[in-house]
Length: 260
Image (tube, rainbow, N blue to C red; front, side, top):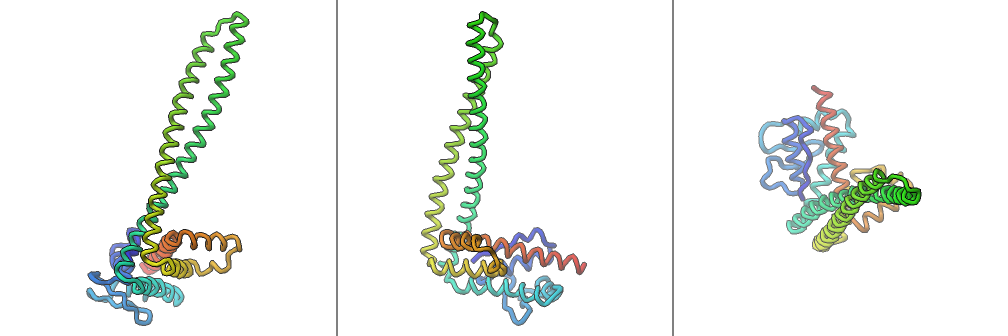
């Protein structure tokens, strides 16, 4: 299972090793590092004891070292629990989940644009209605109304343009929703190919690993999490991996700075 860290936030020396270990968790063939945890250390197969092993040794507390090791061993254990076909399917599923997240954000943005355009169109409608009444009254009173007519035409032109924007946005929303449905269908097929129970088990384990304090959450939050686990286990896995990445990266960076 490919689990990648954004190692750009780390210094070049430690980033290379940490990235290789995390990426290769449970699937170490061809990697520079082999995650063979013995106690608190990680054996390095490509040279002197540097980078990750040194970083683990420099962590400020026993609890940090234990947590760091737990992250790596848990990721490795998950990888080892799956066969190669399942790993590829899970990797593909996580990529699709990322695409799904992006599409949902796109729909949210488009819905915001649509709401704003509809509000602006409604305002233009009200302005046009008011101008039409002013023109009608000016005609009845025999007053000059050329400026009112010009303003009325400008507002009508603005409304036409706004309505085109609304139609285009509606089309973009529908296209995005169609793509979301397609991606969800692909994810469903992949989850079934891996095994729904296996995916949910991985999601539960990673959620516990990334948020050990979740047991103390309010009942409503727990219900929402349980619903997401039931309906979108890959979303839970992706969110958990993101949290684990941030935690590892921040911990290593904090300790690196402290020892400089």
